[in-house]
Length: 208
Picture 1 (tube, rainbow, N blue to C red):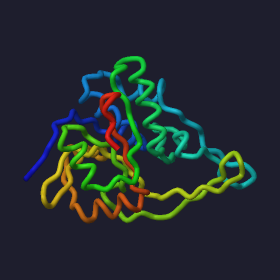
Picture 2 (tube, helix red, strand yellow; picture 1 turned 45 degrees about the vertical axis):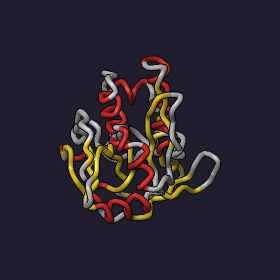
Picture 3 (cartoon, rainbow, N blue to C red; picture 1 turned 180 degrees about the vertical axis):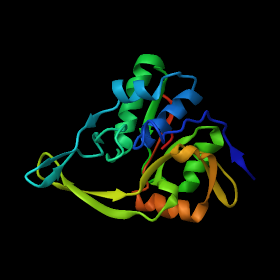
Picture 4 (spheres, rainbow, N blue to C red; picture 1 turned 90 degrees about the vertical axis):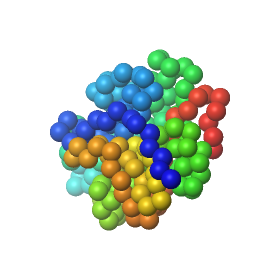
């Protein structure tokens, strides 16, 4: 059995080197018929905060609350599902009130496939770039003095299908297009990135 949802593709590499989360979200918006640009999504809807060095220490935001740096900057980091969910819901409030985004972090893969992919709902999915091994660090200080540990090689893609051996993604990195990755390794990298994922569905029908 093979399931594959056809979703318009966007490459992030040249213009949005650390913008995989935003590009994946905009691919999903285009699938839903909302013709927003990646730039408009980043500039008008995405919460962002710069990184900065102070007293020899790196300071930055909590990626669960804001994008760490800028998606246009290759030296920046990224963000996690709540940031993308908030941005998407701002888009929907303006352009498609019947839709809403939800954070489904921690949902087992079998349930993601059954409840979303099988219903033609792509899923924004965190793993690692080219499924490389994840690396703990760097660390930075949040505004309250708490130390945050980033997991490097973080990457976000749009999960659009599966078969018995592979998961299929619209992977925005290096113009990969729609690409299949081994299920076992994909699940391992997904666990290493806190099993983070988010989804969009009708306001009355979020399935958790």
